[in-house]
Image 1 (cartoon, rainbow, N blue to C red):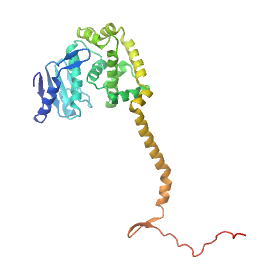
Image 2 (image 1 turned 180 degrees about the horizontal axis):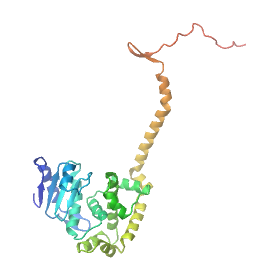
Image 3 (image 1 turned 180 degrees about the vertical axis):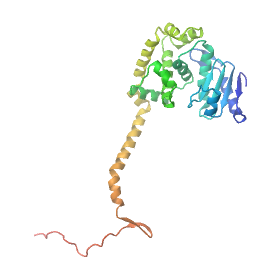
Image 4 (image 1 turned 30 degrees about the horizontal axis):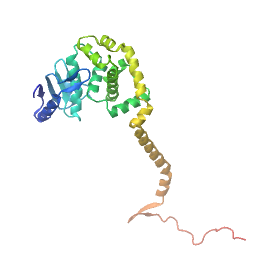
Length: 285
């Protein structure tokens, strides 16, 4: 299929062709410009077990795909939703990895792929808002660990990594993501390229990024971005639970005095009422 070689089971071949056609479209990649991907091999795995085997354990159990830029190979699960999004993420790894000869920090590599594929969307921003509002902002070293953690930790970590790359892309000229990638393409070590392109050390950039997160994502912006509906939903659920709890004695009292007769539920007559009232009170004088 053009510059994309598809390896898939017979049942997955048509899907592989569709994804290959999608992959061949030239796109504009942050810092790299508009270009098509290099020739590569796309391997479709049937499930997570097959992905783990084909990637030799490189993909985490919750992973949907993995890219091997040096081998120009992408391995993807075929049983996950939104395959084009997964493909674009792995293509981001491929584009960056085949352009940059040296090693990259994990947070930058994963953040670039997430940012370039447009994954920093509304749901991720809500998650960032909630994380910042609760004070859970890791440093870059901690972020590297989160990216290889559990699925729950990784969801937030990918959004955080994408936000770090987005912060680089927002740097005013002549600094920013574009100049950084140019220097990385020349073979400069990441720390040196970052300092040359932005004037910041890694530690200084980490501080700028964390302060930017606190400014952009707070409790107020989380509520404005849609978190209010989460609060409203939770509040309604709590009110419903409290009402049910308050009504429990009344419902129990209503249940008392009912017996099952031949025709179904019917009120229990209880003891016979006396023919005359015992006492109606003293007569009026």
